[in-house]
Image (cartoon, rainbow, N blue to C red; front, side):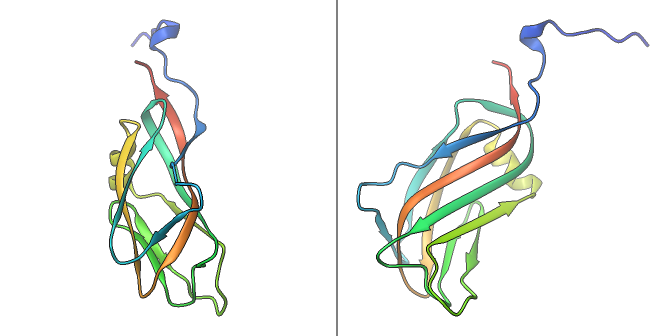
Length: 133
């Protein structure tokens, strides 16, 4: 079997971390049981993904004990601390979730369970390799 090198424009890129900051209105957005719809837009498509991270920050109405944030298309967390929190980070290694990100466009919904909170920033990070166009 003979190995052939791909031309540079067809070669896959090395793994890197790509981020998509979700546009949030100035002053933040109050999230409750009513779902808010968002879109994560990356500037690339992905040929492989090793990990996806979702990061949120809260202000004014913090993420209180017992409250949960939930993205049906991704996952969520319950604040199990005894104090209100200003941030949340969730990683996933789930292959079914990876598939939803391969196009570089990820439409999603965010909702609160057992309360409400104000989101100030939201970011998705994908650790993976970009696909050539």
